[in-house]
Every structure is written in structure tokens, then in C-alpha cells.
Image (tube, rainbow, N blue to C red; front, side, top):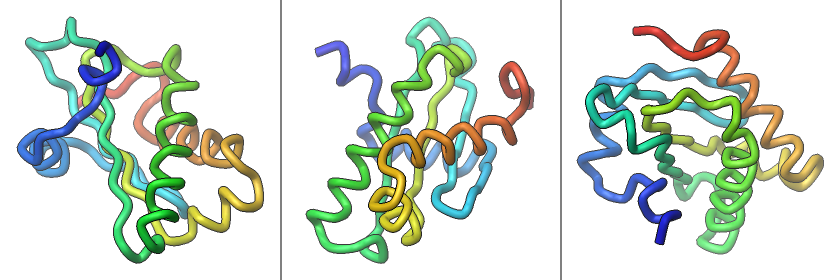
Length: 122
């Protein structure tokens, strides 16, 4: 049950992160981040998106699982009180085939480092 609270599931939550958050792109993914402000005690929440350009349903679900696993393995490096959305680019399928979750983790770390060292300020 705790894992459900760590996910963005409503389209309004995704829209708010896209509209008001900051984006940081790598070759394989785009990371959107949005500070929730007064709801900061809720911790970090994640939403994942993979379009049909990534592949069929099986491929998209595999990519989303890899993104979630890599993202949560970096939980200690994430600022509290933020919503994040990871958007997979079509090239991520090659990265997962070649380097696995480690490659995805490196790509997420690259996007997080662009956000700002030690957290992001708006």
C-alpha cells in the first residue's frame, strides 16, 4: 500500500508537473521535477510515461519497470517533497538491452545532476 502513495496516478498530477515543473533531458529520457511545497511531508512521488514510439505494450511495460527500479535505487539522492515524471525516449530500449538497469540509473543520475547539485531551487 505504501508504494501506491509514491506514485503519480492522476492525469492532473502529471499535468501539474509538466506545466509548472522543470525539465532535464538526456538522450534516453526526460526528467520533470516539481516541488510540492506544503505537501512536502509526503516524500517523493514518481510518474512514468512511455509512448508508443518506444514499442508495443510489452516493450513499454518493460521500459517503465526498468525506469521505476533505477529511479527508486537512487532514493537517497532525491530531494524530499518533489514530484518527478520520467518520460522514456525511443532510444531507451537500446540502452536497456545494452546496459540494463545500470545504464538507466546512469541516465537518471545525469538528468538529476542537471537539475542542481544537492537539490533543485526554483
